[in-house]
Length: 471
Image 1 (cartoon, rainbow, N blue to C red):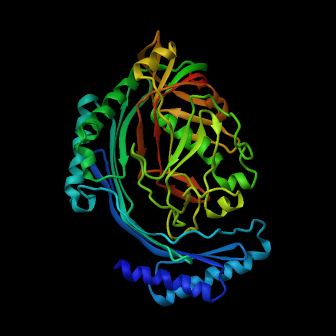
Image 2: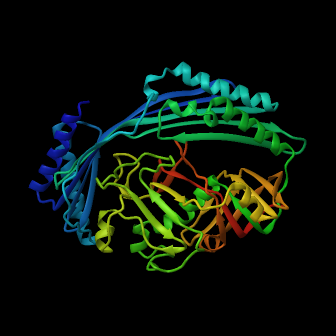
Image 3: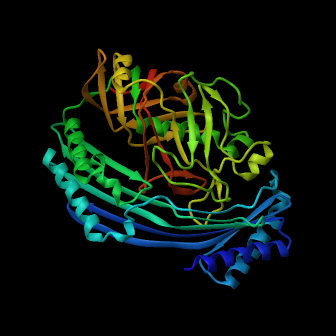
């Protein structure tokens, strides 16, 4: 659908809302295409392409918000949607204990697109399926498998935004995700190994030797084979080298959510009212960024039309910032950070992360391993949980013993647990390398909105002590 027509509809929503008593109006439009291929046990189990298109209107009356949406892209539907949002704002005004106000800011007129050499929409299904077949074949060459899974996911489209100030923003999200999993039986247990890559980039991603289907498949098969001979992880407090995937999950799930301003202003976060405090070691710097040079998810603007930029949450162990939408930034008398996000046009935006990571340090990987001495290396993660008090438990999908400053045997059944502020205080070294990832088959969950594409990752972290669940 023509952008000019959509922008005209969005402006009609703001004008109609203002005319009927709204103090402020934000209107946004999503037109996203999502494609999934599931190639399990060398058969196509799913092949689908879905379009997610619609318009949402947020209205503020006396500082109280009201949100409504419609998939119907017509003038009448937009007017009705605006009236519903207005009615919700008025109906909830007397119950609302946290009034939202906005400072005036300059009108933003912008159009942003990522640099994509070969867009996934120009590549046929058969070519994507062939990539999955090549990846699975490479995995099977490394180990006799019981089962294999190849997954392809892509997301792309248009996002448009206008508000009462007259801002007009257009940008194009994009994400491709490729992953291979191999499953095999050892004498005593089922072994699993997998590798994946997701980035906001085009098909040129797979020209990089690290991310070619054969490389992803070989890694999956090799790491699965390692698990058939892996030793039990040592239990108890251990020194550890925490890899980019596990470190990124900790930065996001365990620390990032605590820094989201809706949790801060409502008193739910244990790091609320602690700006300026030394909460971690001087080696710990945590950043949340909209467009990262390291990769991840491309996010130039949030869903309130705020340019994202880079937000430093913790610098050398000191808490210096939170993640804001326009309302919480105004309430806390600070700058907006571009963290107001919604999973689709069907939901109102709330404070969410962008690309969250630990900042790289100065160690080489070899120096970091040597610094650990004796402990474990967590090279991958396979889920877990984190709570709002900062406690966490995350499983290690791939790990190794470190003995006498060298990586030795693969380990199984490892899990890291603890409290995130204790963990950050124990960081004694950080490598100078960086890896960032995003995901089509997962993402961030909050407030019933899942999965929201985010980026996470970082360097390798040397941790003096962390509780390891194992043998």
